[in-house]
Length: 159
Image (cartoon, rainbow, N blue to C red; front, side, top):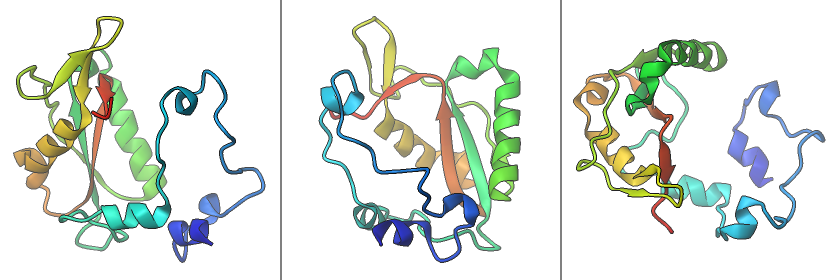
């Protein structure tokens, strides 16, 4: 029942419950959840968490644009990636996409750390904050949602 509430009144055939999909089994040794215990979240808990001005409803005629925000210089080597992603989003969700300029991940503007392999990781919460304040994002008045995309390593700040 909670799954049906999560997908809405008219989800389309791709989102309907199917015997092809089942709940995740218990984590085994080596799985992320076996190594990093997480509390989990119900759909109703997720719905309660999306407050503070974020659009929680379906797209509407005046709010139907996906704002794609590329984060970090890693896209310089893959210029076709963002165009292909925008095309896919438009085809799949039937919504227009506006792609902003690449937002650099300046070391002093984002909390970061080095992982055990010496690679830089960026705190995801700082990225959310930056996207909410970004003038390029705020300029798109018709925004339905903001999608930050990066090829950089990120961390949730819980560890």
